[in-house]
Length: 395
Image (cartoon, rainbow, N blue to C red):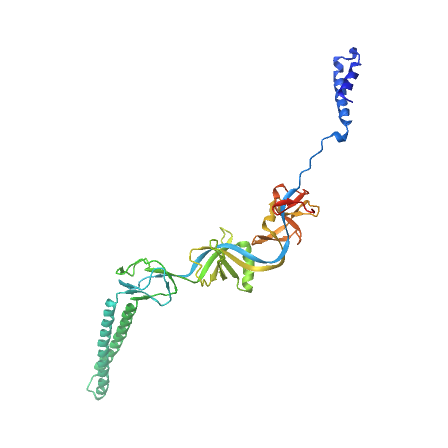
């Protein structure tokens, strides 16, 4: 029924009936007429609902690979040994035998302190020892003579005992002289300062001609051993059990790489882990040793450390960008055969080289979405990009 037909019906109603109290009933009748009029229309005349076009996405297939179980961290390079070289005698720094920054070997000469005062002390000690040794020999001969004379009564027993005491005293004096000579020679030896370790020499704090004192707090030079060298790094406390179990079986290999040097790597092994967990950070400190043959590692440098703990054979792998995180945890979007998207919860594991291990929730060969997640929801139609342009599957 149209509005025109309904109006003609209203005209046939007597005026007496058109009272104010019946206006509500007439209004309801008008609304009902409109509803019936709308319901009576042909469905073909209704506007068609536009369906959303398929969402263009990039995809990849879940594959399998043998994946290493690793611990990654940022490490700090430390010298294997650090020695601060100081003078053990006071004197003038006469000669420096190296250049700052040079590699020095254990036993190489570093400095020479003016030896003349110490050479004089050695000669003096030698002279004192010679004098007292001569006196000792004379005293021994006196004892030998007195021993014969005391038997015949020509020398008293007291004088004989005094001779023997004099010999014992001189023997002690000679021993003291020898010790003094050894000390003088040791002091003279300290004038020749040699490198206690092999390493790289640092900056000089005293120049030739400077007066060195035993009480100086500053070292003349600091030497750092860099072949081998250590790298200190922190691992999460939750990985401590894995690290210890792996160390009990074998030497743990460690790789140190550099973010500013493409392809540069050094390989070593974990030397030890600290005997306590840092409660402020919840981590454990470990140190690795590297041969550092090419001297790529340098004390104070930051490097990326990777420790290989184990290997997962045949692990399911997907590109890292395929794994998303939502309110209910991690998930991937799987493309079904009918080209609809399915949200699949998964348990993600370690990541390596842009790939993420899927521990559960996904099978090898399934197609996952790697790009185009913004418009993805369960059941939405998708089309796969090929050659930079969307292409519907099945064409």
